Amino acid sequence: MLKFRRRRDSSTAPASAPTGPAQADVVCHCLQVPYGDVRRAIARGATSIADLQRKTKACTRCFGCRFELEALLREQLGDSFHHEARVVPPKGDDRTRVPQPMYMPVLAGYRGYDVDTRLIVFNWEGPPQPAGFRLDLLLPGAERVAAWREEAPSGRSAVIDLSREQVGNLLPEGLGLAKIVLDRPDVGSLRPYFHLLTPTSVTTTHEKKGPKNPSRYGARSYHWLFPIGRSRGSEEVYFHFVNTQLEPMRDQRLLWQSVDGESASIPLPPTEFEQTAIVPLHEHVASVAAGTKAGTVRLDPPLFKVAGFMLRHDPEAQLWRVQHL
Amino acid sequence: MARSASLATSRWLPSYAWWPPSDEYALTVVLSPYHVTTEPAAEFEATIRGFAGAGGPLFEHRTGVYRFGDEVAVELDELDLPGPPAPHGGVVEIHPIRLDRPPSRTVDFLGQWVHAEGRSGGGYIIPTIPVRGQEKRIDRDDLQVLPGVMSSPDVETEVVLLNPIDAPVEARITVSSPSGMIVEGGWFTVEPWSAWRSPLSDALPRVRRMLAEDGGVGSAAVYSSHKVLPYFGLRGKGMPLSCMDHGAPIFT
Image (cartoon, rainbow over all chains, first blue to last red; front, side, top):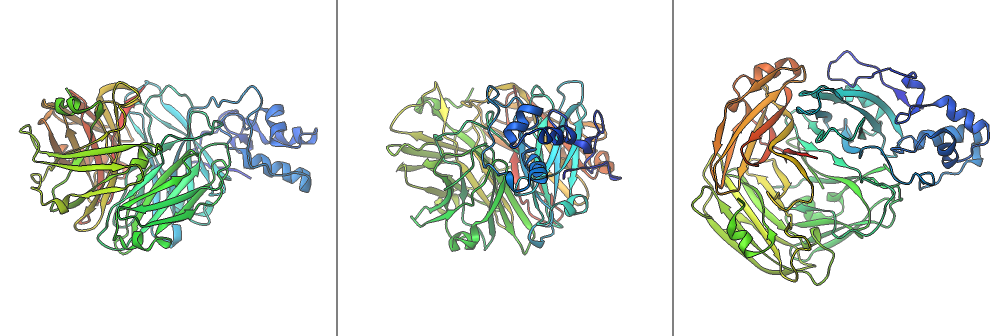
């Protein structure tokens, strides 16, 4: 069950804004649908997410409460509930109306490393009123484990601490996904950046947006790829991605190709909407781990829309380099 | 205002990256056809130029023809080039041209990547950026933002501004703290075809004190008389810069 987080003592911890229905009682934060409405709908015959979408309007905007709805269905229906890999928007409502969600990796002690995450949302000098947004924290399986109401006052930044101290108990693998959903689409470039903090370094990288229409799916005219230049020594190289479309992602692979023709194919785990995977490239390609060859890794076939990041890590110096797709 | 020679060559426009001092970073330009097309008949040729002032390129390197299916990486260390002046560095222009057809729009660009490997560790990987030819609509070209800058005794922001046009650009940096205070810098000039680089607290001496109550974290705005290309990274005390990203334009 989702926990709605309360404001902490630290001024940089996520804050909640308990307005309207008690936020801990809300399952769909976009449309403020309470758990009670969903439970009543199930008691009156709803047996699927599609039924709940029609009866309660939950899960019709950002689709972020899908796994919570599934948990409620399973809780009340037991084995008669069957998970569906693809969430289908209700008929006539096949286009999301929410501002494009924005995604960032959250590392909080991942693999035992001394690394934490911080988000910064800068409302430069745009509208005079504060820019409100919701921050969801998702597990790699896309289960939402926390949601916060936040705002960035005009001309100022919201700085949000997602460290082990703040969220470590929510992320058993030290790995999560931050999803930001703006209250309104007309706030211009309210582009979040994130820091990975180690004892020796701080990275800076901006988010990646989801597609304008997550239900659209089809061939792309180019490959998502990351460059690999030769490095001074061995490094860990991770490809972190989240599936940002409603279509389940299957039969996708990473293709490594060096400038001298060395190649390797690394199958990606199947992912559903908003599920995250992290692939340690250095465990699959020796020359990438050693930093001895330049080339690229690309997503193949070029079909799916992902928010992807390349994370390079020098464990000895505790230096990370992060790059968005 | 964009470089006339490039426009005369092709409607495929160039894109740009920082050309860092060569004693600090080893720069590799990664040219991948896969990044710009899935058409097997695609053919390309790229020219890489290094600038550090208005007097024309300090070097020019042509790759020769490469095709879909090839991967090309140009390591500047291998070219026996003159380095850009320290500490600011220069501008590297990366100009891939597609030989088999013109852009489907009036102008377009073929974005690529640079991988900068720090000589003392760290470094950064970043896509190249055009000054014209993007599909995204910009609301204003006199302002870009750097969310999450830092200035503290332990961490400092390194700011790099690139001016890849034939005229000087006036620029100014302001920083705001999460608690609402602002430090405004004065106007300075980024010369034509040049890079400007500074630790944030050198450009804005009061910024460290202002951000002290907010953990050293704030956000910056870069105002300029013509669009510049801003980059920023964070450097731990005594440590190399480990990551760098571009600033955020103000999209519509």
